Image (cartoon, rainbow, N blue to C red):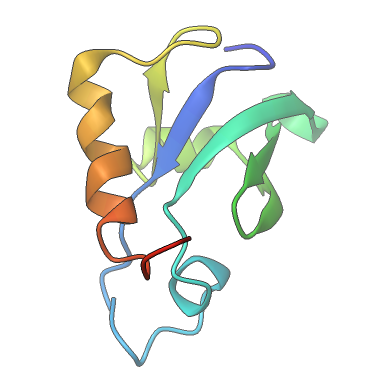
Length: 92
């Protein structure tokens, strides 16, 4: 993976009003772009709710996944955007 690649973070098991994570509390699309590298082969990723460190453990456990190669999205990944954005208020 390299800067510019898109990744997605999986939904929380406790999704709903009880979850206080930054993704749930900000109604994030959970899709981000790798902006750089962090310690121990981790990645700095820009999300719509801010920047976060995504680790190799996140990928190994399925919490994070690569959506597509450098600066591109494949058709199957388009559903991530449409699903996430369908809950946004009009004009967002």
